[in-house]
Image 1 (cartoon, one colour):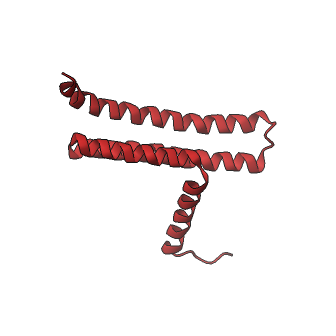
Image 2: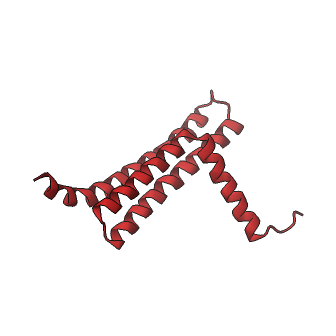
Image 3: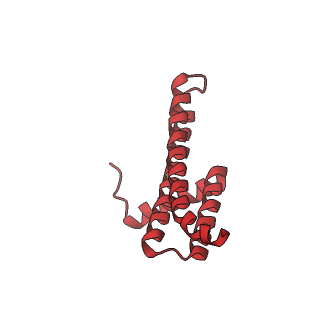
Amino acid sequence: MKGKRTLATSFSYAWQGLRHAVRTQRNVRIHLAMALAAIAACAWLRVSPLEWAAVILAIGLVLVAELLNTAAEGLADLFLPTSRREARFVKDIAAAAVLVSAITALVVATALAIPRLLPLLR
């Protein structure tokens, strides 16, 4: 039986996974760049603390979906030949989760930005 892992070891593995995803996955880097842009826009628009919470949750949702998509694609590549329909479906469904989360984040951003930007446009 494997020895017990310490909490520090578990966190270390999680950070290693995040670093690997950032280094190797273009879409993770794109989502991180968009997250930084959203944070800058929120600072510029001076959103309320509750609105900050909504933005941070939306950013987290997108990043978690992208990381799970990366993991699902890696598992599909490892265990399923790419010619199998099941492999394609696993990858497509995982990518759909990222799409849904990104659309949700866009709706949140739009709902926060439009009321603040309309007076500037007038």
